[in-house]
Length: 146
Image 1: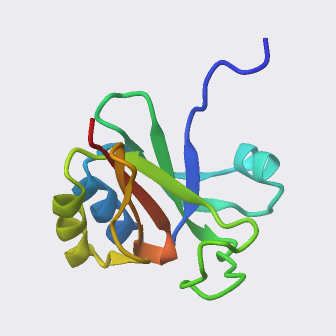
Image 2: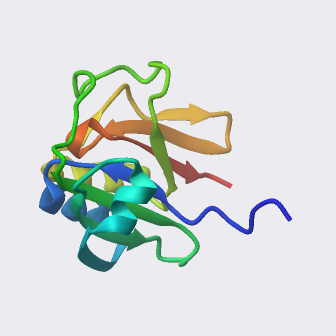
């Protein structure tokens, strides 16, 4: 057997509280938060002296998770500006299905969300958009129309 499932998507953040608040407002549920450190953390990351705050969030259906990590040591490294365009090689985004895209964008704006473009219609099937959230994270939103 190759894989059983995708367990989670991990994102490194600098402001854990803001990132958690953003994804909770989106509709994710905070499963838990803990500090991680020690030899196992060093071994699996290939870094030395790892100490990080980790928050695990799950989608309401329970099938998908997002792991946010704030590195206390070694310090997180930024490789570019937070407002990189969507087409940068290696840029990652997380896509969520939502029931009301306009309402979702409106609720996320107070948490720093900014539309990258605008809400667009794909045929008569989906409304789609990308928003930039905390830490420059690109979040895709999709509302199925039929």
